[in-house]
Length: 290
Image: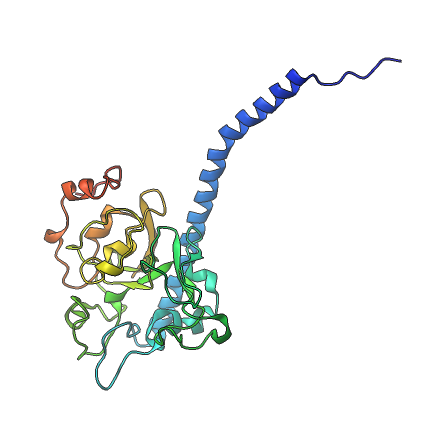
């Protein structure tokens, strides 16, 4: 009877080496496919948000929610002024819809409050604001938001409709600069919602360039809201839905030439040298737009 031939140690090592070689070739390709799938889902979520905003505008005579502001003596802000709560009748309680699939890990302390840096990290999500036993109620940490909400999209706060007597918020002249209405000329250049490290932002062309992607923005809240949105989530791009409800990737340097508010001055935008020299030059490889 012929004895069955077994693999030799050398043959096994050769097979293992071939498998390892194939894996080293395939893994980067699989990672690219996975990232592309997340990017497609990210844009799909934003299309749904465009639909939610469109329905809200139809129901509220073309006006958007009040958003964050320092308020007035008669109309202080409440948690229903934010898009997360104002749009809830249109999206239910689909927490994942508020997230880009590339950024889903919330950055909170054990009590639900935000951790150091206020949204630190390119792939981090904001939230959840409070412990789960009071989900759906105004947060005990900050009562203008809703407990257990989380996400990694944020709204362009220059679109909101705050009280006409609302004072300047930090350096943001909301009474003069906010669009307030859903009907805007050149709507395809006015960002509505997209990839962000916080729930809202007041970007301006004069904002400085972050030192690196995901830089904590808390200390810069008064002078650069671009820090909240200039995040390298999609290989040099972020995804945004615009006021014409179209969705597209936006180049990181392109963020400085979008119509964030009514009186934006593009002459104040950073120079190419300022982009290229920020931090260790992390923005140098990205596409230029002027």
